[in-house]
Figure 1: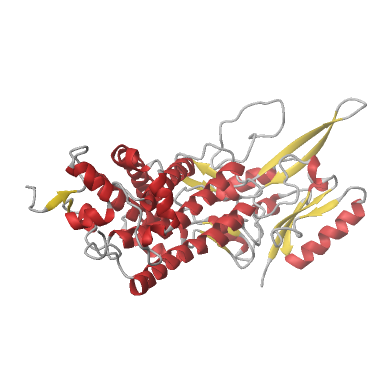
Figure 2 (figure 1 turned 135 degrees about the horizontal axis):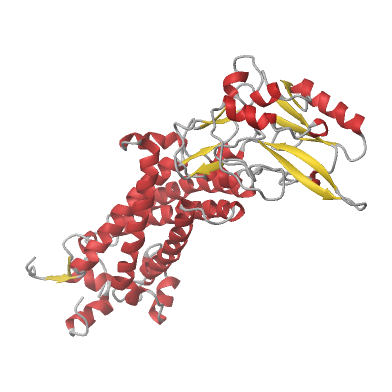
Length: 210
Length: 258
């Protein structure tokens, strides 16, 4: 896509593709996972030829796709997310201005402190969901251990379920203009100034490209 | 309720293993290649094709030789069945009016959740068919007024089958008559099992017999706590973001800033 006038590239093709693969596989994992956890949602198995067996098999396979996609996510966003600086601490003190009126929200780089925390928690639960999921699929551990993997996997559903909804809200209705980061990748300067002023300065000064 | 109980009085068992054969015959289970391990217990363990096994526990005697303890091992058919709580496929593990806990192999997807939560380590996964198998309490026989194949064939009368209350009373009477360490095993946990034992020795003396079995805590945490909480978490997030939108409102780039 040719560079649109007055817009600024906020995410590369690589970032956008990784994000969509994560989003799609995550949604699939949630739907099929709920289809397996809740008997009342077992109608979901009707969408798969082969019923529950295929639904679970695809859950497992898509789980691996998600797991691998997250490795690319680490490459794409790890260096911008897996640390907190002084501004981030200040950001948390005012909760980024999301919950009450704040005079001035501390400046964020490419990602604000909340987004960084989101990615760190996602990283942790990526590890938990992959680690438990693979050994639920291939239960090589004694039953006394394997039965606790089910518990951890369900704990992941609780945390990631809540996170997913909030993540979706903040990326769409909650922050108008943000969804394009995942769409064509271009945002307005006003948006960048509001959400990632430090990053905008870096980009304009040529210290980083995206 | 038409609840039934299979009572296994191990004090009467002669370890003839007729029950093992009858089980295989009625359920059309193939014989399996086995191995001599220096014990009469054969095959060594329950398998996808061996749902009923007489376990031989050898107790060395001070004056030389051994004393044998026999125990017919098969599914206990719990009233509160952990396997049924864990199974993700509706109707795959079901309970009959008699109290038999049965796996519908047609519906089984081989997830092995039941294998890993069973307090008695009973269900067995067959990696060839990718399904799980275990004793059905001959639900196809008892549903038609017959008794399970193992009970039918038992010569010494160690395996009997009948109405729940009657069998429990019989079990306690027998344990009392045996005296000593004799106990009844089965009616006091997992809301009662539909297979019960009269054990002349303490529970711990018998191979692979769980002391104080219960539905694992992990199953409650998983199915009765985290499962509903996951819906609550998503619901709370939906409600929370909705009210955030209408009360605090979205963060518009054109507002504020400098």
